[in-house]
Each structure stands twice: as C-alpha cells, then as structure tokens.
Length: 322
Image 1 (cartoon, rainbow, N blue to C red):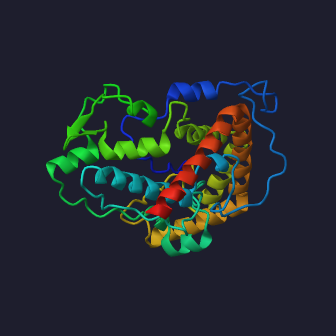
Image 2 (image 1 turned 30 degrees about the vertical axis):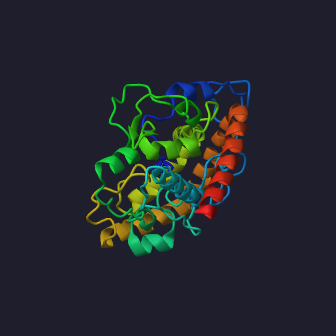
Image 3 (image 1 turned 90 degrees about the vertical axis):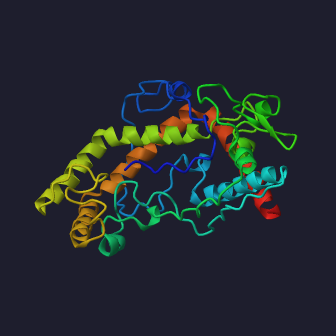
C-alpha cells in the first residue's frame, strides 16, 4: 500500500486543495529531473544500496511531515485546546489522548512486508495498524453536544478556514449561556488554533500530497517496475501468483491474514524482496522523486517547515501546561 496517511485533525470542511497541489507540482524539471527541464523524465539515481527492512528509512520530505511521535504530541495538544474551549462554557473534555514517546516510524509496510521476523510471527497481519481506539464518548447533554460539535450546518456553505478568520466571523455560530459557540464547536476551534491559525498558513496536507505524488511516480518508474517483475517471478517460482507486493496475496483476507498459509507466503515474500533488492531499488527511486519535488517546491516547503516548528512549540507548551 502507499505510505499511510496520518490521521487528520478534526477540521470539517478543511481539505487539501487539488488545485493548489497541481500548481505546486506544475514546475518543470531538468533532463535528469532537476529544476528547469522535462518533468516526465526519470531521475538519475546512482548506485542502489542493498536494503530489506523499511521501518527506519529516511526521506527528503521527513522534515516537513510530523512523524508518529510528533503527531501524538499534536493530538494531545489539540485535546488540551478542546478542553480549554469547553471550560469556557462550564464543561470538560474527558477524551484526552496521551502522546506515545515510543511511537515508531510509519514506513514499516511502505513497500509491503519486509520484516522477516514479523512475517514469521504474524504473516501479513500488521500489529502497528491496530491503533488504540478512544473509549466511547459518554452521553452528552444538548448544550454540551452543541459546544463540542457546533451547529449542524449545510456542508456546502462557507465557514471560516482559519482561526484569524473565525474570530471575526459569525458564520455558523450560535450561543450557549450567553457566549458565542464557534462554527464547528470546540473541536473545530481547537483544530484551527493548532493547524490553521492565520490566513497565510500552508495547508498541512501539501507536503503529504507531495509525498503521495512522489510515491505514485516511483511506483510507475521503469526501474521499480523491473524490480517488481523480478520479485513477482521469484514468488511465482514458489507457487505464489502475485503482481504487486502492496496487495494481499490471493486467498488471504482478514479471516486468515495471520494464519499458517499467510505466514508461509509472507516469509517467501520477504525472501524474494531480499533476493531482488526490491526495497533498495524502490526506496532509492522514491527518494529521487522526493528530492525533485522538494527542489521544485522549496519556497512553499520552507514556509511549511517554519509553521510546523511553531506548531510543535505550541503543542509542547500546551501539553506541559496540561
């Protein structure tokens, strides 16, 4: 599967703009994929390292996208902001998350399963995907529900897209106990304060979408296709018909994903990746596409990095204060 999408903040009606992304990715590239030439040309990659496990791989876009640890901190900070907002109306927010300081990186299944020990233990089942769910929301009173979620409004109607805009707007607001409840309630206010404080905030999905673009281009790259075909041929030699390492094998589903059959296939899958160096090739190619897109979008990504650093400092101060 492609790189996992991090959980987005609770921000109704706030999504990455496809038009913005198209503009960001419209820059030309040089003959080798640098700035100024043919954007469709495959980038030069140089030597390919021998790699297998993808868990700790580093990418050019890493500085612009919070990892699991930092996302945990941001989630915790957003919950602090929700609670502070609720307190203005005499309520508390009890579903506070705690950041996991031991959270692992997100690349464990980037190119399919690549950990031999895990394949032998759990087959294609991914223990990391079993995220801890919040406990059920306790029943809320009418006013408490209104403060937390805001008015039910027509999603096609415009609502403030930044905290700066929201503070001067009465669109989709209401009142509880004589105090104005913001559009989208405390959930939306907390997200705006953390992720979109001002009109010049870069949408947090921009660097992520650039990453998805790089991954998609790498998947179609001739060198990755060649490595994938070699991996597929290796699997076929052992009786497994698979064209891509990103999809479950035939006959494997949620009911048997960690069973003996899945374990046998997963072990062979990892071994074929090792024999063909699929991970090393794909990683090297994806890094080259990310580098190209980072160069093309350097100015925007510089703003992203500065704003992310500010967001993380705010999150740290919020969580420290509790």
